Image (cartoon, rainbow, N blue to C red; front, side, top):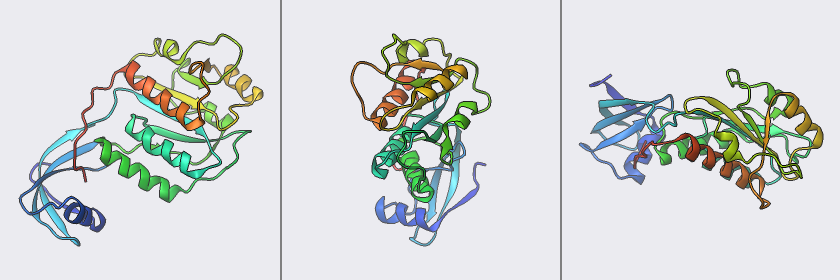
Length: 241
């Protein structure tokens, strides 16, 4: 791969030359969204065509040592859900699952806009692998996937009078490098039938603490808890393309 020529797409070329003001001879980092980060020396710059030579390649740069599928019920306000998507990428989620639940007040998502947000967050945070964004998924279907998630590694965040373990306590039984998924409901949370179905499917019901959190806040708090519990020593890079 070293020494190979790399041509930036027109949109990224404009970003590199106009926004970041890179010129010939500069060295930049370029991510491909598939787990590779390249150090590139620019040989030709321009808004329509920017060409460089790959000097070095890093695999899985900026990626966490675990695979987290993070599900959140679709929210009434699209902007709040988009905030969740953006920040979940920064916090290391590797798969994002919009959930269609009983209390969800929306059942669609603007996939094109969501993908742009994910790509921008990928570059901003220094990651190299673009998280998978599922289509809006019915809750029963979400309980069956993703494949390869070990038993006991599905955690459902829900408030109820029962003395459920905290998310931190539940994560103590998860080894770094493993797959896990955390599911959070929309405004109004999960229905009692959904909670019962989750327990029957082997999920662990967990608490996020005594305070009532907005749905997107709860999902991001869960992602941060996973990052801290399972270890994430990744370093971000500035000026990623």
